[in-house]
Every structure is written in C-alpha cells, then in structure tokens.
Length: 107
Length: 116
Image 1: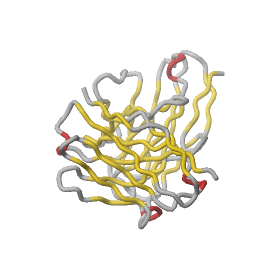
Image 2: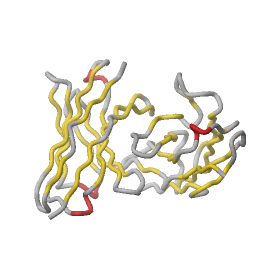
Image 3: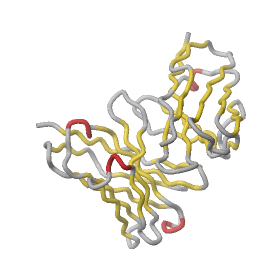
Image 4: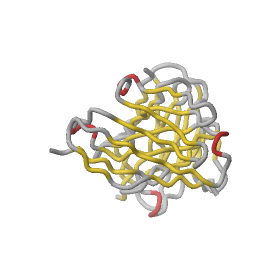
C-alpha cells in the first residue's frame, strides 16, 4: 500500500496568513493526488485533484503543486472559514490511501 | 446538481451486519464509480472500497475482504455497502462518494455504532 505522510499534523495561524501543508507519498504517484477539507461534523469537501486542478467553485486562494512523491497545498489570506482539517489522498493505485490529516487552527 | 443521500443512523450489536444505502441523483448513475470511505470517531479517513455502478464490479481494501459487499440497484440509482461480523472498531461514520476523474462528491455520512 502507498503511505501518505502529511506535515505538519497541526498548524496554528492567524487570519490573513498564508500556510503550506506538505504531503509525501511512499512511492511515486505521478499527479494522482487530491486534497480535501473537512469541518467538524461535516463530510469532506473536494478542493483539488490531479495535484493542482481546482474544480469550479473552489476559491483561487487554494493552490496545489507537486508530482511524483512530494506535494504541497497552499492557502493564502486565511479567513475564519478556512480553519478546518485538510487531507491529501493518492488515487494512483488501489487501495486508495489518505494522509493522516492536518488540523489548521486559529492562533 | 449531484446529490448523494445516505440512510440513517444504525446501532448494531457485535457480530451483526449493517447495510448502508446511498441514493444518487442529478447525474447518470452508471457513468461514475462510487467509493465508500469510513471515519472512526476523532480519526482520519479510511478507504473501504469502490463499485462500478455500470457492471457492478467491485474492489475492496484488503482489510475488509470477506466482510464487505458493495452492490447497486440501477433502477433506483442506489448503491449499498454491507459490512458483516461487526466489531466495536467498526464504529464510524461511513461515507459514499462519487468520483469524477479524481474529483469526489460526498454523501452526508451514516453513523454506524457497534455496541453490546
């Protein structure tokens, strides 16, 4: 199975900050990497797929990059609604696997 | 718009089985694969498996092989996930999610509690 490792596991930031979350795959996954946002008590929400593609409706403050084994999610100009848990996911091969999550908290 | 509506809360005893449904609307049901993912309380996301609603083919995570069965009913655009031999560790919210080339639309989740 491909292991996905996110860092950091938790992150404190202020409104208006820019943050970066990284995700590393235990083997190459090309660009088959997605990012999800989850708020407490809610289903996850897709943000990015194919490592860097935003679906319509996702604000451009979110951006993703990377290929192979190393990926990043950047969130600029943090707003209160951005404080949530973020997960990366590889879908290069089965079983699909997720990172352990990064909890983004308000400082 | 794409909508996935899941069945309600389930409470089961250890050793029992549970069957969760996910009714799809707003798109052509047989054109997109459906995943099941679970999340134990306070924990991360765990992939359970996938079903192709067109032919009914499935792929399961090895951890659940022999205990999980995914099926679909094309007449009602509904997919089902049945998990047997339940243990307390199976207590979780179970989500269905439609995949479109890496983009997922999620159901609202179904809480399954396993307790004696």
